[in-house]
Image 1: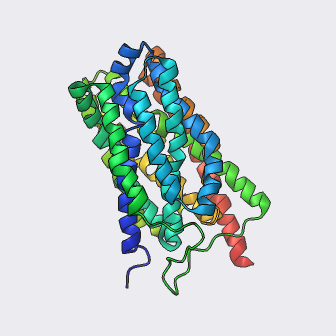
Image 2: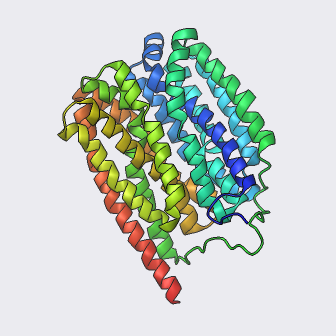
Image 3: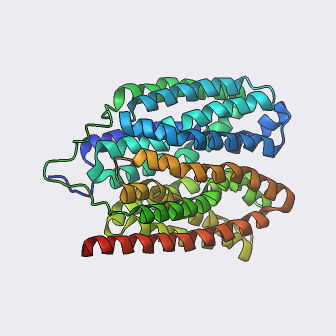
Length: 409
């Protein structure tokens, strides 16, 4: 009999397939500007802030449509939204390959923003929650583990393709990958339920109990969750696009900056693997507090230390560990507090404030680094990370209090 803490074979298979589409999905969109900012800027005549404004547009559009798309996913399942997302991403990448100025460039990112809640994390994690709610935490963790390799694979791949075939043909190649890899997996490989038949849980196994939240408790949990996740997201969404530039700003060579920055992916995967292996012993919000505590230490290292390679590597790995664990917390905590029936809807509403913060963070980081240097960016990140730690402690205590009241009743 399979262990209740490990995903069942069908769930693990679907998590693996979704991980492939997540690697391609994030690698061909969100991670593009990190390695293609220079050629995009040179050919389109845009500033660095203008290039990263594409990411901001993507996240803002996603924030606007995510709650509505979440309700659709909860009512009808994740299958067809995932298919539609692949088509939108392919069309957006074709449009991006034909961009000639800021208007056409941002138009492509608007399409990517429409496809984000459909083909990326929101729909993918909802599919796993709908498929097997007993093991949703573990299957989402598995998805995060495998999907965390996106930057590690696509940063060097995109840089190589750009020097080999140019950024326009690279975008066309990525569009083809959406159609030839992601679309078939979403259309034919998942066989996800329609959102109403959630009976995959084995007979005799009950899903993890959900605390009975009063409207006031639910509102407070939502506010704390939105605030804590937004603060951590300011750092974890704004900084990855600029880690290479930050390391270069501290005097490291471009080659070393790329090599050290690539360690972020394995660090994120390691944190997610540790959470999946050992996290079942602890509540998901306890993991959130621990990961929130690691982040301020990591971003402070280059400021209080020297510019040695060891400090740079410690900074990247520490940041990757914190961001990797927090990505699981962001996707699992709504399930633990609000249940699977409204999971996609709640994650959609949570993404509204988060994505607004996520949207402005790449441009803020770009402006801070260009005008004040990397130290200012890291000091601001330290402040945001400390604030997030305080909020996560409050959220964990609130959840524990509600759970104790529920048990006493």
